[in-house]
Image (cartoon, rainbow, N blue to C red; front, side, top):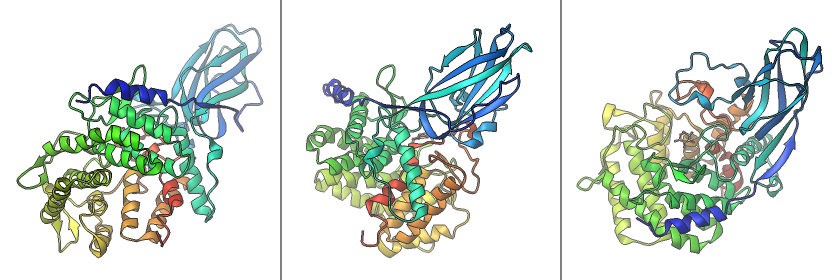
Length: 490
Ligand code: RAM
């Protein structure tokens, strides 16, 4: 499907590849004022979160070095990572993501350039071994940092101090993920994910307004759709542009609202006309997941068939139905279609009849009668419930201690948006202050991939050492605080 369009789509994407802006930065503290012995360590603090390449200038003091200097270098996005080790790591994603290096330096003095790009505020240098005849001098450290944004393009937020700080951290998060495409996290996974792109593009629209980068990413997804025209959940751009072989029900569909948002922000109808058939096609592909007799989506036990959140116990069936409705409504905004309107109405109706418990005011899953925050939030966002009934459902889940919790800023974004939908603006603002504010209190310069205030060390990967601490989908407070949605009149 769309085979004849793909080369042209790829060309459009590549034409929009931005030139990165580089800035040289130095640590604000940590360069030692004495020569180091074996086993000593120092922590360089660059004063903020950066993405880039480090260069170290080192020399020796004492006799002529008669053995190499052996160093370990650890790059940390926040202070808490400084003392973490990989010892005993048995998580299910590769520990190669952990940002550390070891070098042997045979000849001193030396300038050591680290070829791998890192995301960091702190750099811990540990001397693993020298000889007893010399000591190591760290003369200097510089980092060549990159982003594709112009920091001057955004004026500081005026308002309450708590909001100003949260907005600043959110902007930093987005900025450092905006490289030559919208990365999900510059530490990990360093690739383009559709779910993340959707929220980055939203925040970008009221901050950096780099719409060419959004357009580039839409075209990257289009160009890498598979032979049946299905859009992948994520893609790589190096060494060639290539989709990952991971497909998620919700992520493929999110191409639709991402396109809509881009078109609404730019008025670029040429791109809309070019990509709309592919966007529409995602709805058609998703139809295979529905039972045509009941209008209900079939559940699946394929791990990751639909993402929604990183809560591992979460049953995704209802959320998938709601997300389909949400995305189909977005498609309708770009193109009228009475048949689709009817289908949406039927699927809303079926969802409410089948999963809504009127006494509890909650949506309950088929298996294990599970109650989750995610289901109630998506019921509201999809308009399956409206008005007072929708607000009651969000209240009901809040007084349900066993409900499956939300664990990512990504899911929390949707909760805050749902609160806005039911006109609970003050509460929405408070959730931002409590949740994202708690990350700030925990020392965040950029917002994290995962954050469960009840257990800040929670990770779906088996260990938090592979968590990312500058993660795209957590940047949306800047959108909430700037787009007017939190104001009463909005
Ligand atoms: C993780 C990343 C990414 C997200 C996927 C579903 O690998 O955090 O941002 O979109 O999960």
